[in-house]
Image 1 (cartoon, rainbow, N blue to C red):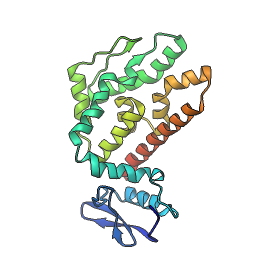
Image 2 (tube, rainbow, N blue to C red):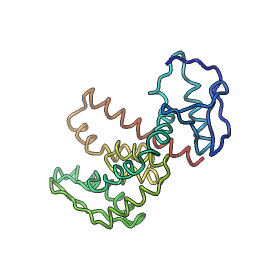
Image 3 (cartoon, rainbow, N blue to C red):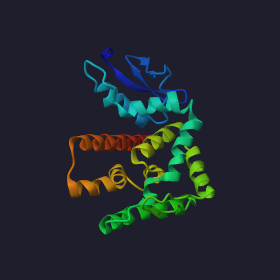
Length: 231
């Protein structure tokens, strides 16, 4: 799609804030009006659109994509998104530890156990930890507590949490970022701990570099999206 507008601006609308292109209200790909919960998020999305040149490049507008997803998809499939996100608690990355070498075991414990302890205090949801290939079995009470906190999120925060959980392979890491316990950089580091350890030992190929760059970008976009929701 080529750029066919000259002026981008934010404005107050019923239910929140919107973005207008040459005075016309912006709509999502699903043809819904873009209504945002904060002026700061509207301004950031307007800046994404204003930065486009001759051709519109959706990949350069992660905040708009997250907002559109919340409006077009999360609202319509809320129960499914909640279930997909909450289900990560049953196989959360931070619960699965290596049984060798000792240096990796120590690193996992130092980073991940703090998050498990925090989640137990914050949500009353203690998680069982395992090592090797033995599956960790979480209690119904713990899984229910995580499901409840996921279900309590509005569509915009749920969209960001769904993105974070999928990118990190961990609901605990996603919730820690949502709650302000972690920032984007530390969430990426926690989620990529095993891979980083392997890279330090064996090096990194181009495919791995690209994959990790994409994961870092997804986490950073979701983190900024959450921050702007509260401004």
